[in-house]
Structures are given as structure tokens and as C-alpha cells.
Amino acid sequence: MLRPKVPTMPTPTGLVAPLVTTSEHPAPAPSTPAPVSTVPASTRPTVQLTPGTALALVGGGTAVVLVVGAVLVSMLLAVAITGASVAICALVIRSLITTEAKRR
Image (cartoon, rainbow, N blue to C red):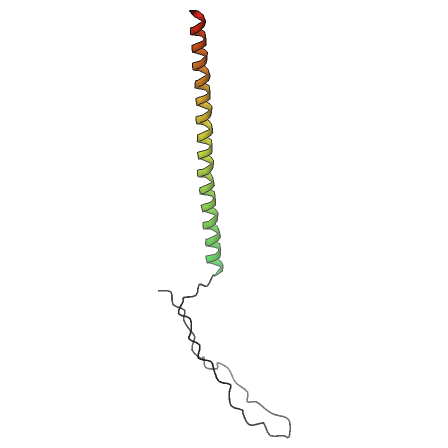
């Protein structure tokens, strides 16, 4: 699906000036080119980040952090409220039990 496109050798688009030598010596004969290594090209697709995709990744990461943080804070708040209400219920029940015991 996401395959990199390898550009072909483009043709020159402007005027190309020939190489002019100013010395009286003839140009040396071209030497044989160095052997090209035959390393196979990688078949893994490459990921190229453009400024738009980088901005989208930063925005998505920020949204994930904010959502996870909000969930964790709300869970902590729920535990704190539950603990406080259980403590208040325990105080009320203890008060009712002690006043009932004093009446007898």
C-alpha cells in the first residue's frame, strides 16, 4: 500500500555547457569505474514525516495524554468521595449507637 517511489534518471532540463579544459595537456583517459556493490535494496517501507503528519502526531499524543489524565483524576476523585462518605456514615452510625446505649 505505501511503497516508496524511486525516481528514474531525469533528463537535463536546461542548456548543458560542455566541459572545457584550459590546459595544453590532453584530458586523461577515463579510468575504469569502481565496482558497484550488489547490496539488495531494503524491502521495508520507509516512513516520511511531513510537517503536517508530525503536527497530527503531536496533537494526537496530546489528546491521548489529556484523556488518560482526566480518567485517572476522575477515578481518584471517585475513590476520595467514596472514602469520605463511608467515614461520615461510620461517624453517624457510631453516634447513633452511643446515644442509644446511654438511653438504656
